Structure formats: structure tokens, C-alpha cells
Amino acid sequence: MGGGDSKVSGPDLKQGVPAGDIPDGGILLGHVDDLPVVLCRQNREIYAVGATCTHYSGPLAEGIVVGRQIRCPWHHARFDLRTGEPVGAPALSALPCFRVEEKDGLVAVRGRTAVPPRASAAYAPASVVIVGAGAAGEAAAETLRREGYHGTLVMVGAEPTVTVDRPNLSKDYLAGTAPEEWIPLRPREFYAEQGIEFLTGARAVDIDATGRKVKLEDGRVLPYEAMLLATGAEPIRLTIPGAELPHVFTLRTLPDSQAIIARAQSAKTAVVIGASFIGLEVAASLRARGLAVTVVAPESVPLERVLGPELGGFIRKLHEEKGVVFRLGHKPTAIEADGVTLDDGGKLPAELVVMGVGVKPSLTLAERAGCRTDRGVLVDPLLQTSVPGIFAAGDVARWPGRIPGTTMRIEHWVVAQRQGQTAARNMLGQKLRFEGIPFFWSQHYDIPICYVGYVERWDSITVHGSIEKKSCVVAYRVDGMVHAAASIFRDRESLELEYFLAHNDQAAIERLLAAVG
Image (cartoon, rainbow, N blue to C red; front, side, top):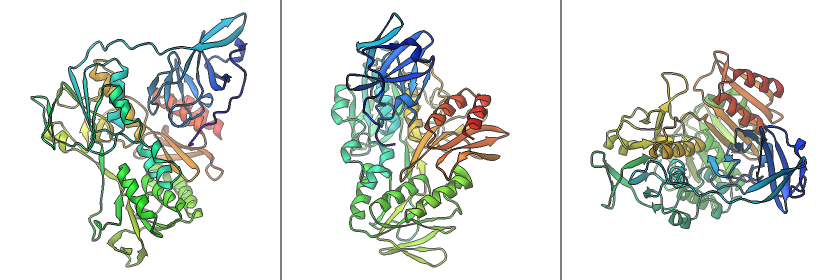
């Protein structure tokens, strides 16, 4: 899922194609000169946009059209067919957009169209401060400018770099197959061009919610009329002897990943503590670098709590085939300079140790501001906290669930970005409820696993297709209804499931699952 095929195929759209070749609600792939382009029909309207997703170069021709949007099958990015503009994360940049001409039964693409200038926002706070420069904070800043906000906009980021593609830190970048220049989401110059003051290596330490001011560690004070708390989460470090030794790492930031890479260059043995998604991705990346890797975790099946025993067992087998050794049902009791001691008294050699045992939301600032918290910052459907003028989004936010009376806090990159986008629009008075269906992806060697929906516990799991053949959809049911699904190499089905879950269309979900097998 790393790079799309940019070779042109299909008809020359400048020459035109029969209108009947473009199915209603469907997609036709062609090209304009050397650029892949898709034609999409929605009712009587026909649109033409670039065929390559601007996120990870996914093939939009294999996606779906929803209303006036085209959605990418790989990571569910969304684009406006009328303008090419990105309207849903993880999309960042716009698609090229073209003028379409229909004459004598032929549809032809004529030339590129410019993105229309945004009108100024109808309501605009005098100043906005975004505390946290991860997925949610960055998405919010870009959305504010895209929505026509021209006021003062400051991002406060504790990390020394501009926002990075965090999912890549445990995947291709750590494995050595993605160069560092791919990691920043945007170059630093982008923020200056957009009039976004991006403070890197800056840490907010207090919030005066009455006076609407943010105090930084270096003494600076930033006034705000609207604020977004996007402080994210912090990796949990086990409190066992040796946990602070220099060869023991957690992974959250680019410097974290760089430090693991530096150690891996001389190490031959590694222990990963925790069979979480990030722990297993780290194990895969270190195996790609040639290290002997052992994974230690208390559960009996990796990821069983999230994916169930069938898919969790498949993932274990996949890693074992690549040489990863599992010591499941065990916990570490101590870390020494050359190894990790387990609760059964055994000792594993380890010149490198990575803890992947989860994260906890960063709540200190929210609590100092007086925001209500409960295992996260509590927000309403508009992502507003209990304190006027303060919104929260991303890993730190806990918002109302789709099931009445429930709340959710989900540590997914795409969820954080989409919440940042929603919060930004609500700062401008748009009053949009955040009701998105959670989506994430995880990469294990050459096998991607996509997950849509959310369920903490399920009554039953049904497997459609074949996990062993790496072509399946695994459905998680509560009271007979599907609330979430994981998939392997069923990208379009995952995309369609997201749409059906959003509309609670259980009949459509059952038809899709029956078609998979």
C-alpha cells in the first residue's frame, strides 16, 4: 500500500468517450496526456479529477463515489469532485480538477480548472491557538485556512519538528524503506505561506480560561478567542528495574524512531514488550533490519482483544514465518544491559528494547483549564469541552458514542485528523456533529489490515472469505448487528463498509458480506 501506479491506462479523455461508458455513481479511468484521470458520474453531473490519491498515491479508480465525493480505497481519503479539494482525512492536498464537455453523446476533458477562492468565514474568532501539533492539530490549522479563516493562528508543538506522518514511524521509516524526507506532512515553509505561526519545541504549561491566555514554558503568553486542545497521548513506560536504561525506548515521535534506528544499526538482538499494533509493527521493522526479535506480552494471542482469536492467530503466524519469536503469557520483571528477565525467571538477550504497551491521554493542561475529564477530555458532539472557547480533538478527546449513553476515545490517526477538521469548522460557527466511523490501518510486512467501526466487546465474530488466503472481511457483531469489520486485501469492501456503518445500513452490510463469501 505504499505507492500507486502512475502509468496511464484507459482511453484518452481529451479525445472523448461515449457518455454511456460512465456508469451512474461509478468511475471510468482514463488519461489526459501523461496524467491518470477519472471520470465520475453522479446523476446528470460528470466530473473529472486526477486518479491518484494525494495521501499515499492510492488508485482512486478502485474507490467509490459518494454524493459529490470520491473516496480512496487504501486509507479512505475523501475529495470533492467539483473542486478536487481534500474534504476528509487523511487527504492533505487537492487533486487536479478538469473541465468536462459533453457533446453529441461524447464526454471529453478539456483543461484544468482553478480551485475557486474561499470566501472569508462567516464567523471568525480574533485569534486561535492550537496546543498540540500532531494529526488533530495540524488538520485543524489547515482546515481553518481552507475554510477562509484569516485571523491570527498559532500552533504550539512540543516536538522539535513540524508535524510528521506518525503512522510511518513504526512502519516503512523504521524498517528503512521510507526516506526521512517523506516523513514531514508539510515542509516548514508551507506554514509560513499559510500564515500559520508554528512554534516547534514549545510546551504549553498553563491555561487561563477566564482571561483566555496560554502560558508557555519559556514564559511567553498567547492570547486566544478559540482554542483547540490536541495534546494527544504519552507512551506508557513500565515501572520495572532497568526501564530507564539507555537502550530502552518507547515510540511516539520522530526522535524516538531515529533513536531506535541508531541503536538497531549496532544491535543484533531486540525484545519488544507488548503485542500491540505498534509493538508488532516495530517487530516487523526490526526484522526487516535483520535483528533477532522476541515479543513478550501477557495475552495468549496477539491483538485478540481488538481483532479476535482467528485474525490474531493469523498475525502471530505471519510474524513467526518472518522469524519473530513470541513469549506470550509472560511479563518482564527487569531489564539489564544485555537482556530482559521474565516472570518465569527466564532471560532473553536484548541489546535493544522497545516498549509498546499503550499510551495514556495527556490531560494536565485540560485539567488546569478546568475542563471536565474522564479517561480523556470530555467533549460534546461538536467537540466542545465544558469550558467556553475550548475544543478538544484527537487522542486526548472522549466524545459521545453512536450508542446512546456511551463515550469513546480512540487513538487512530485518521480519527484525530477528522476531529481536527470538524473542530476547526465548528470554531467558525458551522455547528457540525462529529459522527465519523473510526478507521485505521496496520501494516505487517506486506500485509495491510484495515479496520472500520468500533466495538469494545462483541457477541460473535464471522469470517467472510479466507484469512489464510489473505482475502477476507472479519465482522464483529453485537446483538446480531455488525458494528466493526477488519479486512485483508478487501480495500473496496472496507470503504463501502465505512459508508454503510455511517448510515446504519445493516441490510447492505449483510449483502456485502455474503458476496465476499
